Image 1: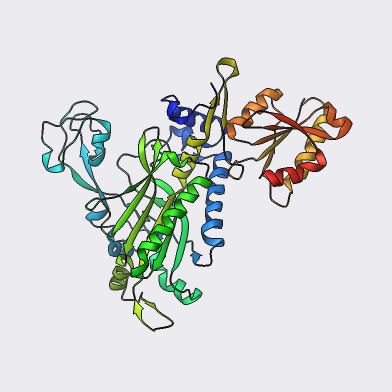
Image 2: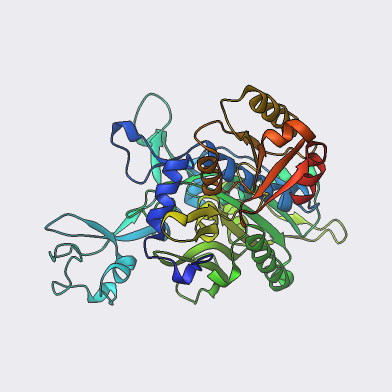
Length: 458
């Protein structure tokens, strides 16, 4: 069985990914030694490398390599008036919660159809609809605000209430004037930010797909109203190119225009980029045309002038906004799922992550053929030390555990593209074997040529 395709992969792909992530140090259950915390996950040594590489790739591509996008890093806690002006403290940022009167299981009303045969509107809910878990009677849906609340100062009273941000967007609108005054940009231009956001989800789950604490990469791109369609198309293309760069097959991604009545209250057009997750087709990224809703509302609520003044005509107006949004955790999950491969059967079965070299936590692994031979160990350590200080910052690891076959297997599972093995021939002619992850084929290379070889390959 060669390179099993996703469409033929077993139904337990998600279980395999969760197991691999725990076993190989990508992602651990949060607070595990105390029994865990529901839907809380910690990134381990390899997971944080993957996650940070994704974020750095994004920042390099959409901020550092562009002259029209400026980065910020805003506080997690903001004045509560921000969330009043944005509408997050109102009914617009709430889910419909349904609870079973018997087993007390809680469900998001709009997701009942995905876990049972429910197909009805809120107005149709009556005692004939039963809990999909136990068959008990459901309560009438009620609004459940997704904001996570805390308090500043020693007293837990109304005046000291603050909220962890549920998105990164509002900080970019609140800092719009600061960026204008300091950077003097001309339209069109964007403000970018990566960082944590928090939502008190009713039903988080599916590993790192939906969590109460998650990370976003987001841009608010300010444009003239008459230009929004062209700019929307531009960011649509940018998102698709980004997905390809992650090594995710675009055949597994679907662009969905969200119809009237289902979009956020501020949006005039929204497009979701949905991915074929094992648990169903779900949103991976989003692209929204927010009009001038945010700047207009923040100006009204704060009393500060948040208009843009055209330097050529002196005209003053609120720019409109195109908002591309990328989820960091969902990016990592899609990459892991899409690059998972199995080849062979039985004792010849091999599992590997076909990660693009630029994404792999380690790009090269160096080890001796035998860990109990000092000459081989010393030679391997020298190559390891040399490759670690390459000008292109090659990510290198070494491994002395088990036999050579087990070491290859371990590096395959974590997605290391190449393994360099020092053997007895190395001691004679200064050549090593370089093994390719995807094909398992080996070639011999001179130690002196490794730096240039991996530089070209990476």
